[in-house]
Length: 584
Image (tube, rainbow, N blue to C red):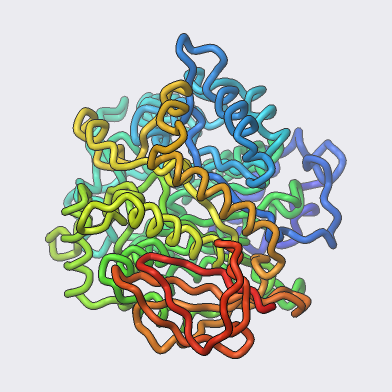
């Protein structure tokens, strides 16, 4: 059976992308998948019944590096050490999935400049170690789609002029006008390179070490699709499409979110659905909300579901939640949640507050005023943040992301450990309770503060929130009574209570509730069967605040504190306090 037979939409999608070169593209894909197509369909891990739900309230994803934890002497490998530590801490009962950030050999950007897509960095471990991690947990992998390392064999072969690699990269004329191209960095877009054919300039969206791939070449698409399927075959329940918005380039446009890019994401989803049907697509697009959710695609009249990404990052959440706590005013966050349309059928949001990247501020566009944005940037600078910038079309630079540990970003103006821990855990309680699939970051799980020394020593601003530990060192930081231990214990308690609540199913309805107080955010979640409802209240202010309560919650139990609330029309919340109220 051919790939086109397995994927009925394939020829149509290839025609939309490649036009009269669609037949060549189909031949390239058929050749790349010839050996797999001889296997029985599907070629998935243990098959999932079509009627099985994609996710439920027990789904929580831990974001972590493969080499996050190491052992003195290097044995066992970091991947084995990570698995052992997570299980010993009981996190296999609280987390469904582990997201391993890029674990391939790399040359820069802490993994996002991949040298070999199908190898595991020996400094982290082996494919066998990843398979072992996949026993207590589901797995999520990164596919760095947009670019590859200049130290890769693909790029070396390109410089030698060897086919098919001579077409795998985008050559460009520096004399042309690139002013419309969206720039995520304050770095040159084009990078000079010496080749066997003489000097050339190649497209480098993110850095000179990260060479953009040419999806205008069908052979490159075929190779990347095969890698995607291999990731699914090696255990990836979710594949994160890194920097996917930049895939297709056409001069005279922004080169962002072009129709061909969306069509390629749909094509990749269709191939996975046919060959590895349990694998989910998550797109990473750190852009304003309306652009971000465009990656859900369109609802298919055939399936009744959206046809592009199964999940998109909720990129507006981290900066809005942070801004609310720093300003003491939840209005912008509340207004955004009020206007937030539910995901289309078959889709959900991927909720987070922190990750390996900084807190992006482009997703605040149109949601907060320039004055409030400036105030937030200044506030996080006072808490040790480093601000990365992007190049605007007029040549000026603007804030792009705030490099800061989320725990440090939420420090009170006057040092107060109790308030600091409470504010931080409240931010996580809100994230865990929102509609969608939640994803805590390892640094947040253990309450890690800014790693200023790491950022300064490396000269890499993002290292401020990428600290890695020897296991014995981390265990020492988590001794009873320390601030980090208080965060860790509090976070585990939040997770245990979250996964027990059917009202927190990713698809369960969500409704913003007016509390009569701009400092108190409130929203309600209702289980899919309508039998269970919860009201989430969060005081973002540094003072005690009152909140109006809807009728069902005037006689309720706070699941977080485990106490029964006295009946009344209002509730008093201490600074930084969050309640999960269940009617009695």
